[in-house]
Length: 232
Length: 232
DNA sequence: ACCTGAACACCGTTCAAGT
DNA sequence: ACCTGAACACCGTTCAAGT
Image 1 (tube, protein in one colour):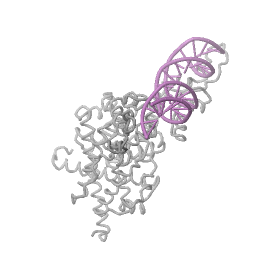
Image 2: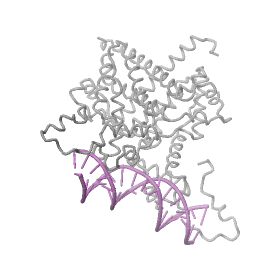
Image 3: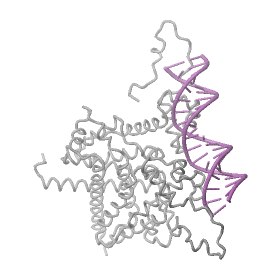
Image 4: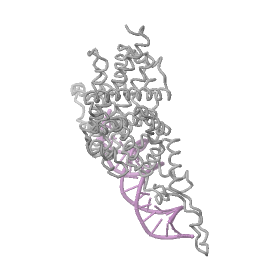
């Protein structure tokens, strides 16, 4: 999974004067396995080694030569999606805008593979790349003047909302459709005029993000009013 | 799973003059199965029919006479935890306080069984009781003057944050400990002075809840300033 | 009505044997 | 080094047979 993880170049393979006996072409690659696994999950919502192997034109046991089992595949996919999120861009002087843009990218990346999300919820984020991203976010908070003892809490809160919102895109919105019972008049009225489907999840994320950042701005302003010395 | 789902009373069982041949005492009950399943998940983080049966002193196939398989057990547990959340109390005239108190109860109920959460993330909430609770929340928003077309979005946003925060209590906070690499100085500094463990998840939830509600208050105030006719 | 053991199809993983 | 088929232990679920 490191960045040097590519196919060996042809020159490398036959650098001897006598070319080696022609070997069967490499069937599997970490990349090809992960590609197939992700599209399998996207399409079926499940990941079984047998189905994955057949999609690769190979056998289940072959996969173990490249990745350490089913769980490792899921972790690699999680890291891959995480790595596809553009790291927070600190060029904008407004930390709130930085954070909101990053949250949107983060959430969109996972929302593109909604059926993967339930599979990764049981494990925490360990990828090196992800850690570096968090470092960038903390740096933005530090620059904004957030109390150092609170920075982990801010990130956790933001993370929780983003992950919950990503999960929301996975679950169908039957929730709001099932209703229509006489016992729930208020809910029925809200459902009748509300958005549904993917648009609902999108709009809810946008609304929540804006509210969360607004609230964090207010908190920061209050802290700095209490302790003006913290300002630079 | 309805409220009449109890053991038949002894009178009912032997209301005939001639008492029926003494039957073997009822081994399993929906309640006893769910109790055992929940404690099994709490302790091991897993739910297999075999392990569940052995804990009940019974066999896996027996369980199918009371509940419709493994998935049904998980759904029943989700509904049970959901039903244990006190419905939002609308006696407080401040809708924000109502919502915050409900969010805290909601999150605490699931945080009490952190290892259950990953098992329920793939399914949406369908329990009748849960629907009624949402109706109460919508009613509070309606009374507060929230635009009817936005009410579902508010609830979704709140729900996403609560569920994400509940998940946060399940994942250990290794995330923040692994670091300590020279590439992440800002994160290292934040970890050094930050809270860790359960206290971190608790504090992050409290901080996020406060920020979210503050932001929603600001949004409502802005909306009502734009359209004063919406006020009663 | 409730319980049981045997059976079934499927699952992730291991490993000796091939090239 | 990479691939394979056979085998293993385990899984959720079904069902005929018991009481």
